[in-house]
Length: 125
Image (cartoon, rainbow, N blue to C red):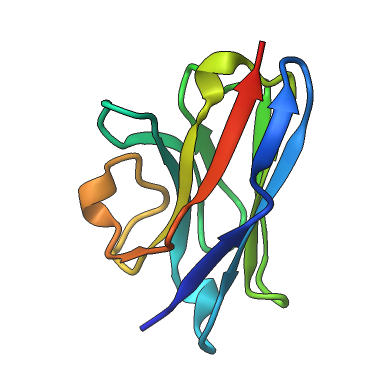
């Protein structure tokens, strides 16, 4: 089992950058596919980005590709989301998630069984 704690959210102007971090407890962080999701008020939680166990593969939602970068440091039990060129529509609570299911990367939230508490990102226009 793994516990996830996000940090790094905040208020930023459009065009700015933020770096989210997600620290995981436990000794088996490298055995989990890690993802980032976000949920805006009144909307469903949506996929943002995911990274494979060994950092060999990443995938992104079309809405963030080219602006966001997911990475992980298995030695530090941490996954990151670098967010550049932020837009007001990126405003949401951002969650990191972990999956122990067989596979490379997942975009479907139902395949992630571990979730953090979320961190708020607000982008002002």
